[in-house]
Image (cartoon, rainbow, N blue to C red):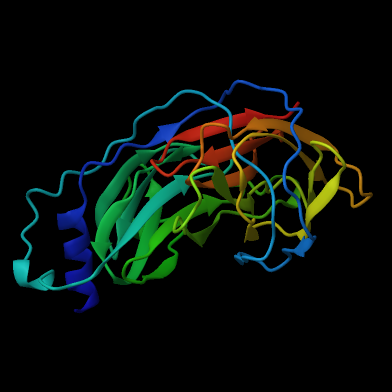
Length: 296
């Protein structure tokens, strides 16, 4: 299938998508220790690893809607999708200072519209293949995209495409860019939760991530902006997470999180700052719900 047909197929297959977000969340304490394990280096830009262990989850809070373009009037040859294996893809907006955006696929669309900061779409099922996703200020065209990441979507695989960075590059912060995560929710015990941690706070340099519920344990060290790591499955329950921003083995920012209701789930957790520089954890659940956890 050529790229043109892939883009048309994408628009034809996308159902209306709801984006969920939240800027506040209940802040709950935690006294229960969690399973911990060896330190993992996560310094590779935009990388994903599987050999860590331990923590992160979410709090609770609101949802908001973003609109999706209705593709019902698109003239698509049904033969272009016959027998094609599908992938799943969703989009999350964590670009600091960036307005609401529209997302185009291979120049067609928009396929997602009016996606605001700290909002996520739900998954859309699309034919596997090569895509360029043009991300433009809402109401503008694909040709005016501020970023245009290219992504190969493999069959039977779920992806999260995330816009990160600082539009204004405040104080030399990284500018807008995109990363892609593979969301693996296979074979999670119903009593456990699987966490992928992502450094998406452009105002903060390299960090270490600690689990401090009981005896402090360094989970990930030397985490660069844009890097990610999937932690080993852990019991779904309360946790205390610390972020060390100056490499002195002492967390500078701590978060109380409660994953008690997330048994059997895969969750993406992003360290992300707002335009004032305040860092929060932004948790993206499997249904696209966003929960924002402020620092203690």
